[in-house]
Amino acid sequence: MSNETKTPNTRITYLDGHTDEVCVTMWQRCQAETHAKAKGWGSALDAVVKLNAYAAYVRCRQLGSTTLPFEQWADTVVSVVDTNNDPADAETAETYSGDVLQYTATSGDDAPDFLTNGTQAASAN
Image (cartoon, rainbow, N blue to C red; front, side, top):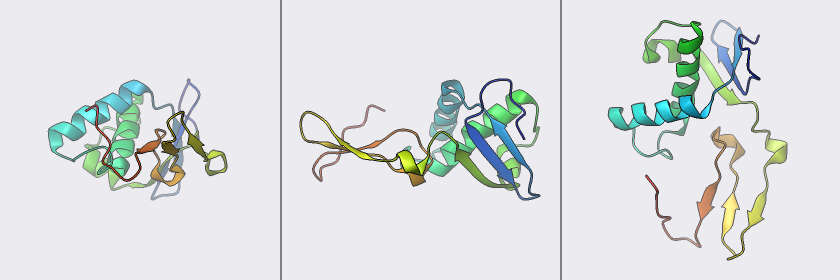
């Protein structure tokens, strides 16, 4: 069930079987990144599930659908799914230099992983 006035892009399924559909924005994703850095969760690649869950949690807190601390809220959640990330749309594309963008639909993240012919990619963070 949607509790959002904006177009939902994330479905949260709880242990009790109910779902919430919320619109996680860039602001919530940035809040999740800031929180992750403060808590020492590691890089975005190390904490994809936590980052997505925390971004959804921030939205739920803003909407007033939870007042629980993150860890307690997460303990009630079965899954957080980006509903805009349809596996049927996942594909591999080449850039002008021959490097490959790999879309990983199962990661739950809407950003592609950039492969550089087996070398470690530079991080902007």
